[in-house]
Image (cartoon, rainbow, N blue to C red):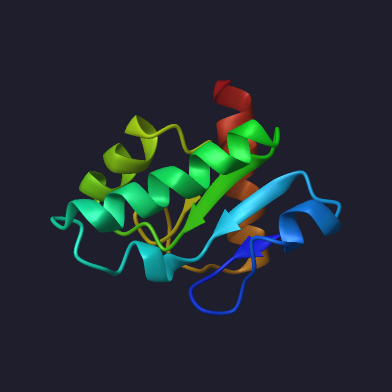
Length: 102
């Protein structure tokens, strides 16, 4: 399930079978110095945890965003901070390298 800015409903959380809640990048694009914005993201993560859903936030572009998400308990993150879009072969090679190092 994708929890976005402006097109999602909390009511869907009880009706749609899901095991992962994806947080739209729009939440990270707001002013992170504004405590309200951070609390909204934290609230979404808390709701997901209560419902035993994993959380993934998209659009992570900075180390500060990564640390914020880590600090509030977000399970996963994706975005340019980790890697730019790439061809399938490059991605598979990257995954293979990480698997070998694990």
